[in-house]
Length: 512
Image 1 (cartoon, rainbow, N blue to C red):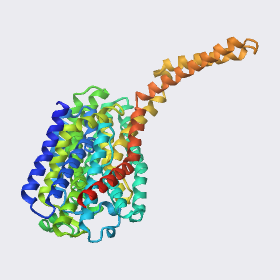
Image 2 (cartoon, rainbow, N blue to C red; image 1 turned 90 degrees about the vertical axis):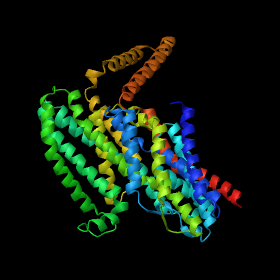
Image 3 (cartoon, rainbow, N blue to C red; image 1 turned 90 degrees about the horizontal axis):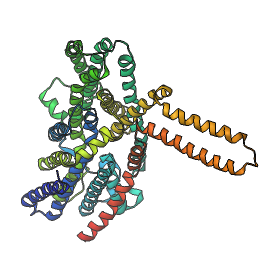
Image 4 (cartoon, one colour; image 1 turned 120 degrees about the vertical axis):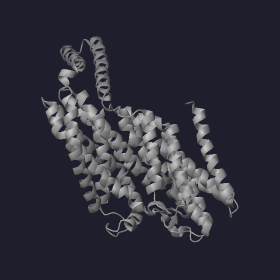
């Protein structure tokens, strides 16, 4: 699709949102500003779809389990379903309690300017990151936006620096946890299946257990993250459930284990039947992971829609609430129209601009097949569940991308063990470099010209060896891509904060 056509369609969605808000709410006090905020919210939702959703489906696409079109269809449907079914009806007006609400007092106008600035700044940063092919955290983007606007409104003292410290910690914790868990699962698959002489017999035992474990993890994840916003409603309908505000970890784990046991019983005979007609080859065994990957992509998308839609519509709901009641509230109801803007915007952004980041996550960091992608999806679900239970600050984006890194680095490490057999070209050049150095040692100081020429040759040979090593390493993990993504993670909060502060002053000046 032509790039200008994509931009036009995205702008068309924002115009439709603006028209609806103007027709239905344009007569309220400062209704024009609500229209503007709604456009910012639509723009933010599309950027979340373009950037963040790639983490849920990118590995499945890279492994060949889903086509780009299939991934967009699955993710669009389940993201929207997650947002509309389980996205919640109330949201905190100041994301993550990162600034002191007292800075606004009862000045609803100042609060509206701040939230609008945060929304637009986060959307602009996500847009830039998507253009740069850098998957970044949308939560960190909106946090940076709120911090920047808060500092502009009330100074440095209004920021909860303890919360910001947790966010900084997540830059390290999230990718490391995701990478280690994904590498661990891939190593299990390799050691328990691929390194066995009879791969089919090993797969018959191990793969049903892995699929059951995946279902256990995802049902637990979905219960904790996908149902928490609608848990009160479920409890009212199903009185046998524990009467609580949200599902407990133990209850979610029980649901997960029930799902895992049922899956094992159902899947084991089916996998045995499929294996019966297969060759003892990795390529055949990879096919057994295709359907689990599609389900994983769908469930991750549903949970993401239920949770991260708040990043798009939370500030918009806060603005609407402040303008309706002319006061700053700790919590704000999310009207249906705002949820629709969030859910539809995420799906539209994914369909129009998502393929760029899907390709990055799926193919441009490391080469993936179904087994590697399965390990990444498992890591994404398990890390979020247990990190949340332990109170560790994590980012789902950083976990997923860190899991891709982990899989790539494990491949590199395992293959480095037999480098002498697989990478003979490198060692020919290394040996040549050693011989040149030996030749240098026997030359006398009087043979100055010969020494200089030999030194230059050694230097050139050293560069050649280094280049070959880099090429070999790049076959596993693209170092340039890793550096770019990590740099984008580090600057997300300050970049969004700086943009937000500038926009806040502009909006404040317009409203004055």
